[in-house]
Image 1 (cartoon, rainbow, N blue to C red):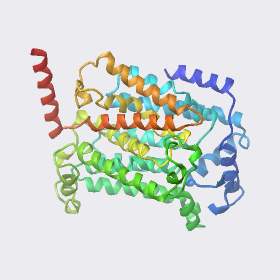
Image 2 (image 1 turned 90 degrees about the vertical axis):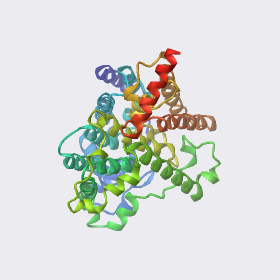
Image 3 (image 1 turned 30 degrees about the horizontal axis):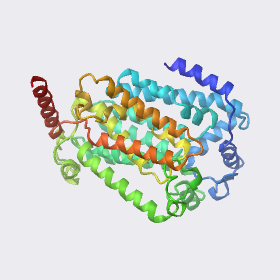
Image 4 (image 1 turned 30 degrees about the vertical axis):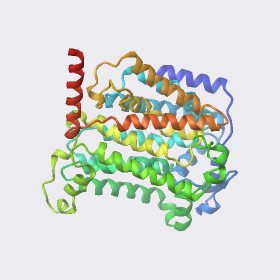
Length: 428
């Protein structure tokens, strides 16, 4: 599959013209760095001041060096390699989670928009996702050294954030996963320390010279995007779209939905977040024995960790103030797993790991949803209709995910009840 996709990617580079959007500006911004500038305010390109953290600077400065000063034809093979790595990691995540069937991997290789993002636009979004995908692979690993694993997950997520901040969308789920260990406070503190250490190390060159400028520009949470480029909210009038009230409303709903998933789905035992936080009180840090039952079952670990991280990321996408075309790479890799995790029909069990063979209509519905999302992301320019449809599809998938679970404890009883209901129906 990867070999075929590599050949397709080479064909795209050879036959489809490159479109300049941000590459030239990236090269101008890192060019200032290579010339000795360290004040973020003065590191500018045609699109304005540099607005990405230091990891972006180092990655694209390296790309400028190895591509002969930013020659597009030299950069495209590098981004083709990034793309193949992205697909390979996404496939590994999907297979290791054990939810989606092998046929779903086709969704990863047939995306026109993903090929464009990587090799025809050279955006930094796909680059930022590579360490994030590695973090998910590591989080799937069941190991006796959970602290070391969680430190690695935190460090990799932080590396992704250092290129672009969207990787932060996975942080809430990572924190819950870290706490789900007998002494989860240690795991959470170690993971958070890894995140902070990486940010300080990567940003040191700028933090030690112009710290205020770096923090203000590299982590600018209040940026207002142009209405003309939005893919998800073109139906919203521009005066509302750019308003602070609209942004705060989306943030509030985002947080509420995250809390619901954290309480009802990511915590695998009765009591949810409340019990988890109580059991992992700071008294545990001082020598308490903890509670091993807080962790998911061994056989569920990879699916549980994957689902939590990918759902947290998807919730952030659903309630993002604006999605631009390159943002599709934030979650395209997760669609096979999310679509097959979601409970889309009443005859499907809530736990995807315990589903029997799905009927053809279930597979067809999932591929139809993926295709519809892919088509909408290729509508240019976006319009009110395409934006409404995208939100409908996102909302449908989110409801399906809310109706599903990958866990144990209280949720396992749901499986037994559903199984008994299906057996009774067959006997009737």
